[in-house]
Amino acid sequence: MNKIAAPIPFAGSQIDQTRHVCAFFNSPDEEYRVLLPFIKDGFQCGHQAIHIVNREQRQDHLQRLTAAGIDTAVAEQSGQLEIRTDTEVYLPDGRFDADRMISTFEQLASGNGTEFPLKRICCRMDWAVENGSHVDDVIEFESRVNELWLRREDAVICTYHLGKFGGDAVVDIMRTHPMVVIGGVLQHNPFFVPPDEFLREFHDRRSRRSGLPAVA
Image (tube, rainbow, N blue to C red):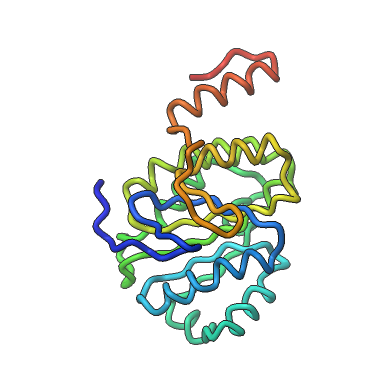
C-alpha cells in the first residue's frame, strides 16, 4: 500500500513511507525530550495518541504530558488519548502471544471506524526484559508486525532503554525496524532486514541453541 498521509516530523527528521520505528534511549528524560514534540504535534493534527507504558510509569507519564501543555483529562475523555499498560496489552494472561498481539494491533490501527484519521502509537518495551523469557518472542514479533504497519499509515514508535537490553538483543531489535532513533536523531535504518529473511535466520539461530530442527 502506498502511503498518502503527509510526512510526520520526528526527532530531527521525518517519518514518511516507513513508519515502524525503534528508538533507543539512555534515560527517561532523553526519551521524553524526543517524544514530547511528536506527541504534541499529533494532538494539534487531530491524530489519536495510544501510549503503552509500564504499570508504574502511568502517573509520571501523565505528569510529563501535562507539563508539556497537554490537557490529559480532556484528551482522555474525548478518546484522543488512550494510555494502556504493558500488562494489559502484551501480557493479559501472564504470557506473550505474538499472534494475539498482531490481532490486537490490527484492531488498534486506524481505519477501524474511529473518528481519528491517523494514530501515533508509542510503546515502552522495558517489560520484555523485565520478564526475560519474552525477549526472543518480542524480537520475532517486531519483525512479523512490519507486514501490518506497511499496510497502515499510523506511526509506531517502540522505545527501548539501552541499559536494560543486552548487546545481541539490541542488534536484533534494530534489524527488525526500518527506521531507528539513536542519539535523539531519526534515520533510515541501514541494518533493517525484511521479515522473511530475518525470521529464517532467527529461527535457525534459535533452533541451533535449543538443538531442535528449524521451523520455516
